[in-house]
Structures are given as C-alpha cells and as structure tokens.
Image 1: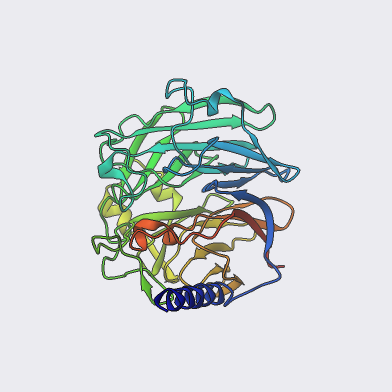
Image 2: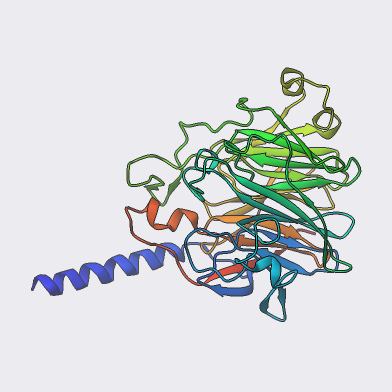
Length: 369
C-alpha cells in the first residue's frame, strides 16, 4: 500500500511539474537546434546569419568549446585544435563563456576560467588561486584566429569575466566582471585592462533580492541564495551607450561610452555619468538591435522583454521553455537567437536534485517590426 501511495504521489508531482512547465506557451518561439545534454551558454550571429554557440566546462557532458550551427547540426569551430584538451591553454579553449560578432565581421570569443574567488555564486569555480583568461578575435572572412588577448593588469585572483562587447570605433572591449563587481575595459591596441566602477552601487548585487521560481527560492544546500553582481551587458550599434546591471538588481543602468572609454576619469567621476534607465527586474542576457531596442532575458517569469528608444518596456515573448534564457545574438534575418542554460534547475539549487529539462536548445524569435 505504501508503495502504491508513493507511486501516486510521484505521478502527481511529475504531472504538476509538467503543468507548471507548460503554464506559458508562444507559437512565436522557434527551435534552432536540439543539443541533448550539452549545455550552451554563448550565442552570436554574424551579418550573414552564421550562428555560433559556446559550451562551458561545468562538469556536465562536453565535447567542444565552440561550434557553428550548420544545417541543424553543431560543427566544431574554428578547428579541432582549439577544441583539443591536450594542447596548452594558450592554444585551446579552457572554458568558453561568451561570444559576440562585431561590426567588422569578427567573432570574439571570451575564454574565462575564474579562480574560486572570482566565480559567480560558486558556479564554474576553477579551484585555482589565479584565474585563466583570454579573448580571441576570429576573422569570419577566413575563419582564422587573428589575435589573442590576455588582459594585462587584470586582478586574475578575483576576476570572473562574464560577458563582453566590442567598441570597434575606439578599439576597446567592455566586459562585465561579477567576480570584482566591476566593468573591465580592455585596450585592444595594447592588451592592457583597467577595472572601473568596482563595488559601486551600480555593479554590486542587491543581496535582499532572492531569485524565486514558482514559489521556490534559488538557494544552495547550505541555504545561501544565488547572487551575481554585474552580469548582462549591451552596447548600442552606434557605440554610444553601454548598458549593464547585476542579476540581483531591479534597475538597468547605462553610461555614455565617451566617459567609459576615458582612462583619465576616476570612478567617482564615472559614477556621476551613470544613468538609471528603468526598473526591469531580474535579468540575465542583454543585447541591442539596430533600432536601438535593448533586449533583456528574464528567467523568473519566462520572458524576453525590450526597452524601446522612447523608454517604454515591451514583452517580446513569454514561454515556459525559457529556463534561464542567457546569451543573445542578432543577425540580419529579423530574429534574435538565444540559449537557455537552465541554471536554476541544476542540482545545487534544488536540494541536490537535478530538475533540468532535456534537451538543451537554442531558440529564436522574430524581432518586433
């Protein structure tokens, strides 16, 4: 009898979980590729609509760090050697975190393996006392690596480089660093990095905000809530404004890049130029389109929203399959592409029980007209 009751309870729990998963549905959501057990994070789309995805090393199934989607399948990119674990760290991927295609048809690859002190809420902890970071520039006309950067001057014991954007006009890269609660500005001409706005109110998580999903708080087995400092970032196509925010923060911020790029300004002077854009709630990935819209992925209510140039917030999509929608990429085909990493459903945040819904997928949805 007890066994029968247990089966009924388990069946009810599964049924209830599936019902919750299907609470929201949109026919606008399109699957680009099923990835099985392979967790993708970074997504980038070129002007010719080539789609690239990255896979971090987080203890799960892994076969490559970077791939291009061709005819519905993932193909190793740029070649096998960069994805070969047997080569030294200068010539193979350690932990590909983010991807972006710039306005000159270059794919930029952020290979970021933080030390334990720089990891995001205990995720991707490397165990080392010093993190390992590099950034590759790949010319998509030739598919060749043309430059590798190593972030000279970066505090690699505390850094946790997460997302990046490329300012082609100024030859700078802007990166979020939740490990240091800061923005990192990398000079692409000298490979020199400088850290700004560290531990400011604009880059530091609000620890009073606990991420909650369907009534379940995102806490680890010790009761510690997930907390991430500055994480998602966006750069407008004219390189004028840089948008940023912590995950655990309701407000979206921006700063004019004429100030962010000025190495002579102090943090106090930079902070005076930061603007509050609006209350957008919990968000993960950010990206800007050619019209000046800023897209934000929001896992707690399964949405992608966007802020139009007039400051209004719109919902682009709501669907229960948006399980921690993460990185985004926009090409010229009228779609925004994105990954769903399902971080909130991993075992560490669910009392040791794996709640992931396989397969992992890359999705896309049409941009607003």
